Image (cartoon, rainbow, N blue to C red; front, side, top):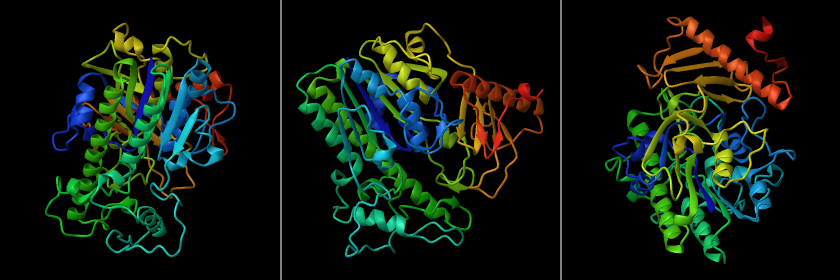
Length: 457
């Protein structure tokens, strides 16, 4: 059997029809989901982009041990295991953070294609290329976000026809993926990791997509808003339009995912492949007063992710409410292929959930930003606390939310339920101790060793 993983970056779970959205058009992903298994309570563990991919590639939790960094030489990677079992593999991506050679994210793949120019990738450095910033840039009074970031992106796409989505990066990723599959003489034992940075900002879909969601807007096209507080920076109309730009990106991504899935069928791969559709995280659009990932805040709009898996024979039309996480992807793939998993993996195979042998794999989901915050969630409660950080001047007190009554995490109820908060923090620290023991290492946050409450007692 083949393995095909389709990644979209920063795709909010609640912006897909198969997850309940009623105003954004995603017919192709929705159709695929109807023939697959949908995981309703999927979470990343470490955030953002590169830590999530590390968890996918290694089957391990990262938020305790690693920051935004390379893959380590000692890591045993999914690509390497499959290569050792005779799989021909390819990594095709425009996620330029993976591109630097020292990051090692192409390790283990037979073929690697990095598509240049996404976001602030220094792809075009010619000073003679001039771009019009005024149409797209809105200055923020405070902060030091460099205007040059957006200028670089506009240079990268300066030769595009803005009315044609064939120029966009998701289209380039899909076409390269189709070309690689088409070039393969054999139709089995293939492993393709198709990693699209869209719908990540900058949000610049062709105008036809934007008109679907905000046709009457006449203001500035703020495709790359400065991260930070919404209040004092964006008007209601501007924020609404930015949401429309993102929605347009989501619909554009859906179109090209549909094109890719149709080609899988035409080329004869659809019924002989384990196909996984997933995202690394979501995106804040003012829900807690901020736009973009400017704070290490693991609220639902950022950390609930779409996770859809289609096996040719089992799990069609199934929805699973059990808590699953990004380190589960690697052991799941290996289990489906009958490849023994490693003892050192932190993640768990989802095959027992899909087959109906198990109803749950864990009681809690564990999430964090390295050295900045830890969070523990189950179906009812969400508890989070922060460490002192050199990146943020604010020090936030711990927070507790009742997800049954308050799914948007608006009302902090920690003063009403201090015993629940204490229990959840203890469970979180027990999990930290378990991972330390499993990997035989200590966790440090700015010089202070993090130890469990039990250890302190």
